[in-house]
Image (cartoon, rainbow, N blue to C red; front, side):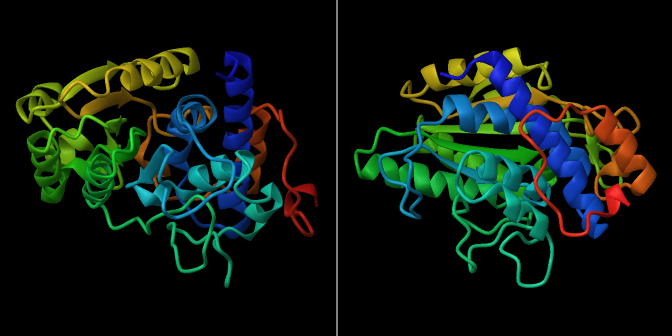
Length: 290
């Protein structure tokens, strides 16, 4: 198990990576990436039981599926720091012929990525398929998935939730990034999600509320608790309240930073708020230093 201080340090560096990645190519999704940095850091460095060498099969180890694939800067940074590929490859984000495309893909064989994602609404279905396969193979490891709250406006999500409960996929933990924001505004303005805890319970899921999704200690404890609840006949949902853009004051809580890159001045301001803990990846002819 990882130390809390180590997780906090990793998350801070991951946030720096996110800001720099989207700035250098003037493209990407910083808001949700920053908001979920604590969750994905705790998942990969504390909760998941992973093999040292990556393989697409994923048998005998926990696996993760990112359904809201637009937060790929976060996913790539965590995978790099977790040893799936070299951290310096982050400087290729969204470039031609890079393995680090705007949404995760599999055709370039990027270690850590088992399914292409970004077409919202599909990730829970994929996770259900792998969870049921693990049960058929008597594999006791756990399947994790992350979705966005706006993504819950997709009908396929609710079909997958029914399927998981019906099949008693108690090796499945789905986390919802419940930040209340999506690309066009607040969830309540675009299409209200209503009483999410009640809905998940009505669909036959165990529900865990994580109201401090940007508090690393709370995230770590919640993920550990969720894992202990596996094997009890029901799939598990973590409804995680986060703040979009967390860690950068001018981005926090605003849907306007869903998919907008900061300019040079904003990037300097953002990085000043995020401690460099593991060392920044190198970038050729770094414009931030000019």
